[in-house]
Length: 221
Ligand SMILES: C[S@@+](CC[C@H](N)C(=O)[O-])C[C@H]1O[C@@H](n2cnc3c(N)ncnc32)[C@H](O)[C@@H]1O
Image (cartoon, rainbow, N blue to C red; front, side, top):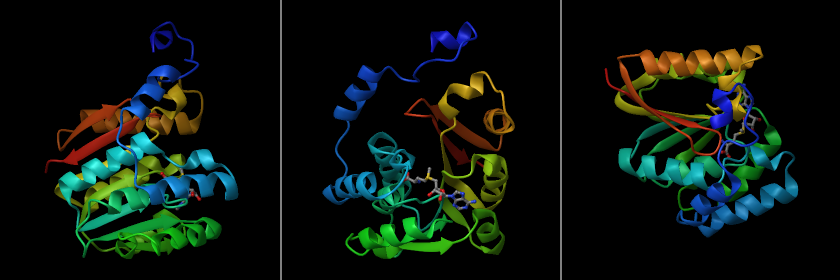
């Protein structure tokens, strides 16, 4: 990231060879999730939306540690991250997933039907902000991964709904490196959100440079 300090955008966030090494040095996801990746690549447009092994195993690890009973995902796509989170939830846990793409929902459900964790997942079709307005629950764990223009709005609403000690995990907080050289309104949203989280004494956070950046936030009070 030394390019960032001399005011030019980096070509890559993490050196490709280092990224490959981290991938190979991280335990593999379950076979069903590997199949889900292949099927997403073959059948769905824009397969790079899927968060992949490093983010997925991070989510699974955090979920196993928190063992959330009530969880939320904003932006489910084909279900890779949802199934990763569900792995760490108790058998009677519920993960509510917000998604606007009916094709992605149908696709994901075929994998939920085959997973020992699929019964924990409830999909709600529609814009996440509308769904959030209707949800009345206390959250233990949330993954935010859609519609960057609304990231700050999602975060603030989810923070209100999160119990003290609960986690909020935000993907793509490096935004391909544009947070160090913002040029658009969306870039500005990400910059403001990252600043606000770091300055808020009501939360603790760690900003991980995993893939496109993962911010792990714990509500303290
Ligand atoms: C980056 S993908 C999610 C990837 C997924 N979390 C994973 O790791 O496999 C973002 C998803 O959010 C959905 N989406 C976009 N805008 C949305 C909105 N306003 N409300 C809910 N879902 C939305 C898109 O259809 C897309 O499937």
